[in-house]
Image 1 (cartoon, rainbow, N blue to C red):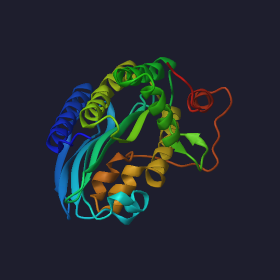
Image 2 (cartoon, rainbow, N blue to C red; image 1 turned 120 degrees about the horizontal axis):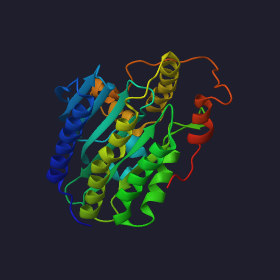
Image 3 (cartoon, helix red, strand yellow; image 1 turned 90 degrees about the vertical axis):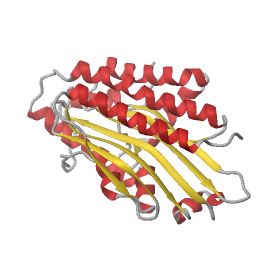
Amino acid sequence: MSQPDIARVKAFLMDLQDRICAALEARDGRARFAEEVWQREGGGGGRSRVLAGGAVFEQAGVGFSHVMGDAMPASATAHRPELAGRRWEAMGVSLVIHPENPYIPTSHANVRFFVAEKDGAEPVWWFGGGFDLTPFYAFEEDVVHWHTVAKRVCEPFGADVYPKYKQWCDEYFYLKHRDEARGVGGLFFDDLNAWGFERCFDFMQAVGNGYLDAYLPIVDRRKGTPWGERERQFQLYRRGRYVEFNLVFDRGTLFGLQSGGRTESILMSMPPLVRWQYNWQPEAGTPEAELYEKYLPARDWV
């Protein structure tokens, strides 16, 4: 298996963060990202960037981190015993965009690389990532576009790649305690190393680069749509599902907290405003009900 080039991966990730932030600032037209450079006790650090109170984006967080340590958390070695006794590095770009207009979906993307090494042994490494879409008021053309870009990203790597990682996304971003999907999916992959370093790195780059192609046309289509208090209240209610997933199920959140990561950076994915309402149900025949009936159940979109 080809050896990983950690420096190239880091250079790509830092450039990706720069490009995504520049594109989001240009679309928003008013707010700018504030950057906080931080160091992690135990090794490594990162750049957390947050845009708040924009004309389009209520809050957008785009973070780069590169952290390391001499030993894996016990929770990780329980699932991956081959990591015991190895020093490790993890790096990635993770972002969550919370628009103000309820007709623009929330979106999430993440691309990451992990490597664990010890003297006298081959390194253990893999890539992971993906992107997924969480609409409140969904439009079929938007969801089809999102998945069309996801499929196009995957096609050079094999006909089976999109169906596999689309299904994995549907299964991963699922709130088991609610028995419902978080959104309309996209791509999710992890533990990717079987193709060798160069091809795996190429795929990770394709996913990272594909995110803006998937998301910005949807932003452009919906940012002028009028909305009122009804839509806002439903948006805030559905954002609660986002919080529930991130705190209960999300691997990146759990790994970051368990490995001594920077809490503010890990939780910058949270929406700025959110609400819960006891036993709320959408009225039949409403756009809110359509989200549950037509869009949240997993289906083929392309």
